[in-house]
Length: 197
Image (cartoon, rainbow, N blue to C red; front, side):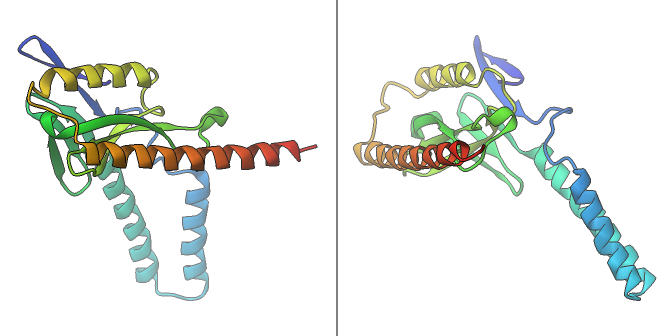
């Protein structure tokens, strides 16, 4: 699960974007689109300063997106899981975690026709928190890493932790809803595939 920090004989995993991670790579289509837009501005007679300003704006926005992507991380420690996003972070204490789930992104199909999976946790209020970079695109052995994370959670949550029935019911309803949506999407894709000559 990325880098590991040591503490009291316990290994605390961290999951961050690596240097070679394909995250917000500027695709050829994006470059062509931006270049065409800037060329259109120049062609209709817009001031050179506006064309340069728009070009600089796109470069600055791209750099800011890359920095934001690099800043996001999932970090574990003695107190809990720190989820760092673009505009700040959030700490979820081990005792407040109710479940750690692997969910399939049924709306999209990733590389090689594989449905991407990602990991989220549910806190004591039933809020779903997506764990950045903890997904099948960044981690080859995602399910093994999640097993390690769950074992760490079970170790650190304390003896007083208890499952909250209302939150457990909420998680079960959300899981059933996702499963129905996934089944529907598989059916649609299978139907479309059957129509390909």
